[in-house]
Image (cartoon, rainbow, N blue to C red):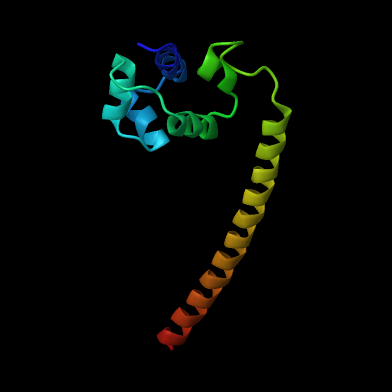
Length: 116
């Protein structure tokens, strides 16, 4: 089995997820993950990218080459990106809440009109 396959299996164990949960989260079939775990399939760039997107604190250098630690101790760029995404999501949620409030008021107004 390739070393990168072993590291994917090690990382999977670290997540505490089942193979099925991990595969579903990454958008791959559990069979593909099972084949990677057994060494039948090699880990491709597509899977590395999916893991990197879902686990930004994982050291991709470690995953690909085995150099360094599994997790990055401090990743300021990921932290900044996450903060930026959180801010955008908060704004979007506030806008959705405001629209829902308007819809609710309109619905209640229509219901009162129908009762008369």
